[in-house]
Length: 425
Image (tube, rainbow, N blue to C red):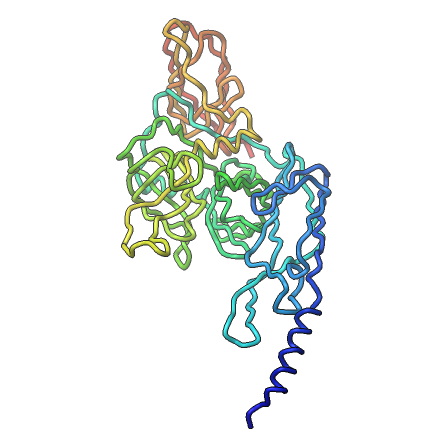
């Protein structure tokens, strides 16, 4: 039976009335607070104010819309709360995606919902979190001897960890023996905490204490001390063709997978975020993000960040040998916010500067060298010093510290060999 024209007209008028009378979506408010107050609030990279602050959003962002005309949130959202002198908190604001389907069934898509109308973060004093020392390789000194690939993978691999969060896994590495871990920002996005899995398989709770989306660098902290750590290389010494080793935890692989390649490019990359980029043909796969790229002295030259792939709309092609790491210089830039003394020492200015040098070896080798209280490298090393009096300390875990006071004359060359005795039980 076909509907009459009268019935069709009546139905059309009823639908028009329903559309006209449908309630407009009301705005709702997201409230963000922090302890201490006065922290900067960024939502998806846009500064919206300082805590406490409120941001208005359509009601449909907080709950499922009640009509086809309600506004939908079509992407996930994260909030970053930061304050100078304190740790940073990044929180996932949304949950989803959820699927919507039109009444006709012909249209469909996804939407997200803001999880709560009130967000609160507690920021810890940086001085209580960022303890220990960051070890940056000293500039313009005699290089430490190169190690074999096997030695690097064995020793450096002990400082590489797997990070597991809400949306996946990544890699990271200790930069201090007090539990500070460097990784990529995109590994930690939306997570206030992560599981940190050590090479031994032991799992520790990790707190995301700093994020920098601009440089794609983040710092994670676990409680404890005595962790194996990796020193940062001086990137001014990097060259194309130099051999590098990547260590990380790609998905569905054995832990701490290592790959080897060369540096094929160094510098800014107009197709990527700011920073100094290292291009390499060392194999880097999903899950490697945040792991270290190492030189043959076991020093970190960069953080493995991404691999080139054909993007949607581009001509399909197999892209091989193009992976990218953010340089150790970018990481040092972030770490210096909390470790001002982490900068490598500079070359003495001018040829007339009065300098000497001290060649330092130890038994066992690989011990940390401190000059005038600052870490400058590991044994064996030759360290240039300004003429004058200096204190040299040699330290190694489980061994008694060794110290000497030296008077350095202009153009002098002094050799030291420290024998480190075991700590008495």
